[in-house]
Length: 253
Image 1 (cartoon, rainbow, N blue to C red):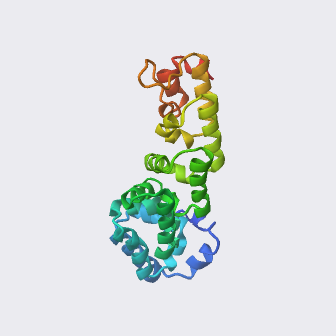
Image 2: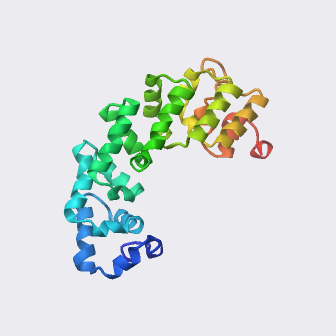
Image 3: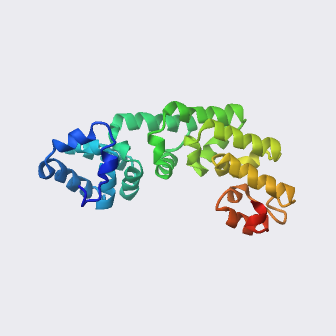
């Protein structure tokens, strides 16, 4: 297991994992799972991460592994994307196809997504499969009822930035209030910059306020010195200062 790349210190922190492992024979119980996952396109590095984060995969039967991975392939997910989804969030394997289907069907219905839009959202943010459904549905309420976006606008925003679906409502509300009330941005402009709603609130307020004070904030793309907030909140302070702040990093900090 160590030669494979499994982090035993992390694995043993999973409740019950250590006791489970000492009872398993490597060649009879572990090696077949390695070959099974390898047959589904997982590299040894990816398999090691699966074992480290979700050691209970070793208790799944060959048929259960096939069924849980096969669910996504049957719903037209690309195999390479499926492997990456499980690599990022190995505990997805803990869910039965029925559980996954119920979760994704609810999200698709609430946000009025097409099957292709849902797939793209899940591939972009596989955490969506594990995120509490109530919290995800609450995002719809926040965007549509509290912020005033139309159903179509909400759908478009989610398609542009699937991270919205797993963003805490307090972060959404804080960023929205700053953009709408402090920067006086209309809903249409905020919709175009949906990624900003998911950004770190302190980063948005610090950088945007700095630009406003220096007369460098221009949200209108038809005018000189256009400053798209979606790019303002990206990158480190040095990149922000060079591209938008037009000052040395020391002056900004």
